Image (cartoon, rainbow over all chains, first blue to last red; front, side, top):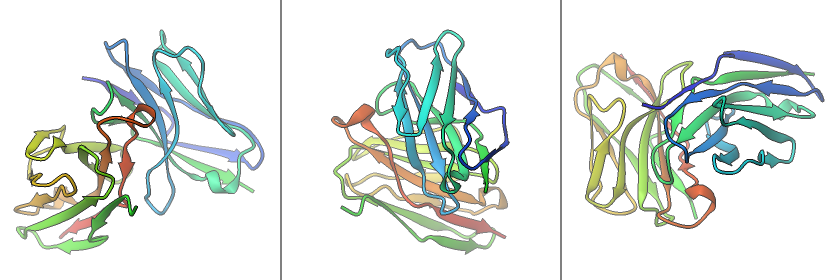
Length: 114
Length: 115
């Protein structure tokens, strides 16, 4: 079974600084998909960024970027120029192939200090 | 489009009571999912469906039942509520084709407390 591990239960960052959230996963598949979701206090699950395993290029979405290391099975999220609105729980998630259910890590709670 | 809607938003149940969590999507998505999120944890899959009339168990199905009679609706039934079912429940859906990696769209969640 696939597993997703987020080893940092909590992180904090100063406003305007950069922070990196870690995620590792375990799979025997060669083709899969990885995601980072943000969950603010409203509980809504918001997709932040996605990565297809067959793509070598790291995904970026504005201030959010990933460092995808397929051989190491590592998928970290970098948030640049952190803003107060970035404070939330962040979940790393894995999907074996299109339309299969997601497997989530336990999450990292990010605090942003003004 | 309203997307994925869930009712109720909050509910308190007594041990042994039953209830149905409603989930509806108006995007004509074939795939629908139920996840639960326990305090301080990630989401775990309860059940999912690949289309009307087809359902399958996820990681934590015990104590729950589902049905999928229409494309739009995917209700989750709790028959004999137990304190271990205290959680936040999320419904999600994704399309059969189209869109980037067939993204999953989540509802706002239902917070359930069993006492």
